[in-house]
Image (cartoon, rainbow, N blue to C red; front, side):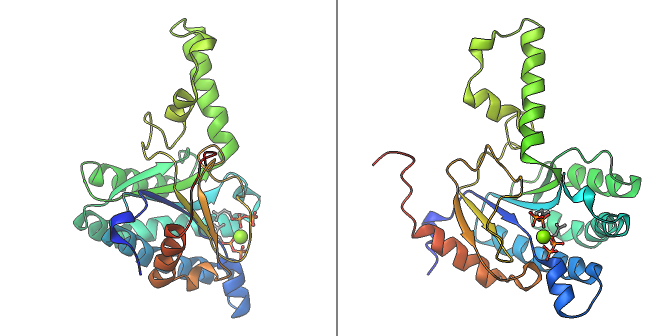
Length: 240
Ligand code: IPE
Ligand code: IPE
Ligand code: MG
C-alpha cells in the first residue's frame, strides 16, 4: 500500500521503450511514440492526484538528435498534438508546465505550443510537470558552469565563493530555472539500467527503480508500485 504521508516530492522518469513496443507489433516507430504519449498522460494525472509536487519526464535527449530526421520530426509534432489536446485539462488540474533544456531550436510550431503551455499554466499552484527536452546532464552542468564563470568574470563573485548549492541553482532544475530540486526517485522503463545523460548532478542520492515494462505499457498502477518500492528503501546519504 502506498503511504500517502511519504509521497516523494520529486519523481523523474526515463520514458524508454517506445521503439521496441512498436517493433513487437510490427508497427512504425511513431506508433510507439504515440502510445508513449498516451501512457504519459495517465502518469501525469496519477502523479498529480497522489500529491507529487514535481514530475520530470525525459522526452528528448541531447543525443536523440542522432535519430532519423523523420523520427525527430515526428516526436516534435507529437508535442504540438499533446499541447493542443491536453493543455486545457492540465490547466484545469492546476498543473504548471516547465521545460528543462533549450528548446529554441525545435520547429516553430513546437516552440509556439510550448510557450503557450508555459505561459497559460505559470501561475498554477498544483503539480509542476517538468519536460526534459533537448536535455543532457552534461550540457546542464556545462551551462551552469558558463553562467557562474560569467559572474566571476564580471567580478560579482570569486572562484572560492562557488558552492555546490550555487551550481545547483544554475542547473535547469535549480532556483534560476524550473526550481524543482533533485529527484528522490528516478524510474526507468524498458529494462535498460543506465541514466543516458539524465540529471547527472541531481541524481547523486536518488533512488532508482528499473522495470522491464516498455513505456507505452507503463500504467499508473505500476507507477504507484515504483513509489511503494521507493518507500521501502533505506536512504542513508552516506550517514549511518
Ligand atoms: C523512448 O523510446 C522515447 C525517446 C527516446 C524519445 P525509444 O524510442 O528510445 O524506444 P526504444 O528504446 O527504441 O525501444
Ligand atoms: C533516453 O532514452 C532518452 C529519453 C527517454 C528521451 P534513449 O533510448 O535515448 O537512451 P539509450 O540510447 O538507450 O541510452
Ligand atoms: Mg530507447
